[in-house]
Length: 534
Ligand code: FAD
Ligand code: SIN
Image (tube, rainbow, N blue to C red):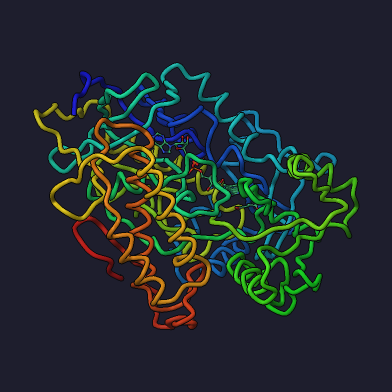
């Protein structure tokens, strides 16, 4: 592969969402920071986050209550130390955001909190009603842009991590201009590439969420953990041919009901918390009701709420639905679940260090252990802030800019050949790349989705292994994304097949019970080991 001459910075951050930008601001104290984002600067899940950010800041709230709610939602698989860090450091990070110009919604002079599923208190802060993520990113970007040592580089698609002598020393990427990869070196690299929703046919995620960071880290030899745990959000707007726009859980927090096609309110039959049960419970209930009524959707009913309040509290959702001729204050809204959030990812310690030296990971790409088997609503923005800042602090402490590795002739670049044979097949035309990705996404949705079983999982694993892709040569963003989606799809399917129990978001109808052995075990996988549990 032809490569342009290397350049150097002190730190590289892959990703411009909440985790990446929070980290970059901290890293700017230590030297030159390069932030790559594969699309426009603001195109990220963070930008679309609606419901809010959870923190124990209310008068009736306590850090220990937030801790317990998070542990309960994680269904026995959270790392308590990591959760403790999240809930204890979270409030300070929120105050810091406010100092940098973040404007949360207020009730008079006090912060306004809303309630979401599985929270025992109203502790979710929000902004512009339902545009919390966009306001957070505005404030973080403004701060980052004011720091001259940060360079923000949009339309720069990271392809591979550069590994020399078992340490990560840089990245290769494609910039806006074309097909000749660039190579930049640094003392340490932070993966903050976000989620993997586009591994599934139905997802709430923006199109940048292809699991690139997980796939890149896997190829470089990093340990991944808990890949089988994918959270499905119960309420994505269902309009044929349209993207699955999220309808925030906060709509149910404010009193919205779910009804099946017979207009029965069904959630009280499934859980004592009804519409505010944990997300996995609600998503399964919606799926079962759809099967029972042979429908493609159920309804979200907001007609019992004050119409003016709904319009004011959820302006983005109200306007977006109106564009589809749905008035959420008067009409029943067709919804169904969609892949939303990855609890699994690149395994890290409490300082965001991965198993590869000089490589760190924070935000949705990472598995710190705070979410366990199921993330509590509105905890991921908080995780991005807390662990983005911690990652940067550890990078500054452990890897000062002085320790540049000297370049080698042949740095190890693990090419994303997603096939299983040693002879790469002939290059596929673009349409075949697209066909392969569509097939993988449909397989994941149909056979590795909300309700799983061994037979379907075996079929998915087998078929995903059969799909062959050539090396992406000449390199292009789409070719790499396709390889990444396929690689991540395989990892999720294999991990889901290996976990023979039901826990949190991983539900197997052939193993409907939780394995009660204590402590609960995490799954791990790397390109050197098949899935194992520990
Ligand atoms: P992101 O914000 O997704 O940013 C990823 C960045 O990585 C982007 O800049 C992208 O361009 C870049 N990137 C990816 N791959 C590459 C590559 N190969 N090369 C270069 N750059 C790359 N969570 C909450 O806590 N509260 C909510 O209310 C909430 N609402 C949500 C609503 C929606 C619709 C969605 C999709 C998610 C929501 N979540 C919410 C989840 C939360 O938004 C995400 O988990 C969180 O924002 C992830 O932040 P991040 O920094 O890890 O990644
Ligand atoms: C939502 O607003 O329902 C999304 C919240 C989250 O994913 O945490």
